[in-house]
Image 1 (tube, rainbow over the protein chains, first blue to last red):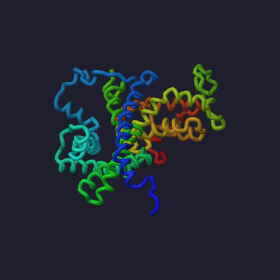
Image 2 (cartoon, each protein chain N blue to C red):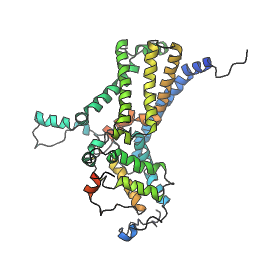
Image 3 (cartoon, each protein chain N blue to C red):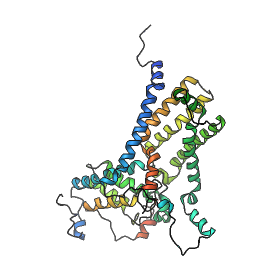
Image 4 (cartoon, one colour):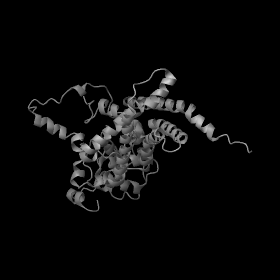
Length: 230
Length: 156
């Protein structure tokens, strides 16, 4: 028999299931922390908009001359992003909620975590997480549709957007196929773990960092449309 | 502080003669690198935060009145002006500047600062910065054309 290559399939699987999990978790948390610190330190280096904590979120726009009738409130709601583009807004909202909730409260993930740490988060029913996974995959398809067929989005799309969209959908697709044992389980679960690890590594260094930046910019940065304006 | 020796000298106002015949003048990379370098972290963070969602489109009144022309989207203007400048800082040519001038002016933006970004990116700041860099190279808009002509023209 010939000698086996050092990257034999079993070796790769052990690496993906073992050290790569720690590497990706470390890169994910350290990377996000690094990017957040870089963003917060911006105010010291430039004369551009300052990031500071503000209580503006709790203050209503003071305008005593306008009676706060229900009609006024409905008009204000209609002028928000949710009112103007409800399709995009609610599908993005559903996609993001399921994106975070499904992996965190998945029964299978929590069992593994309990074996590792001794405690776990409460787990959702498997059918619920199945539906959530389909919502995430539906969201990915919706974004793909928008990028291909809506002229406005196509104008600002770069090739990297499609790659990142694929990286987002891959863990969910491989996960649900592996769970229902549609194809070969061992291959699919390894691909699922690998896809998840790649996603975790890529998050702090691509536009997925909006995971953290959204909250910083939207609620703490000083600007006309952010709630940090004071 | 470096002494300005380009067409953009803070002590004098730009006259018509300064803006003509800019085709043969070489591009002053030093000023571009200085202006971009001072804001590089901000530009990098904002370009990274831009998720290419095009939700800023609806907030631009010029976009809405042009019938949804994608070239009027604030994100498009930002990515193709400051984004392009930042990606190829020292390699910008006179031709690049003429194309960037089309994106920044050309009746596509009046810097009304209404553009809204769900991620919180300050789009007017970057469009203003890109315009400053263009002015430093003597690239400025042609104010003889009418705004309406441009907004509704098919070639825009």
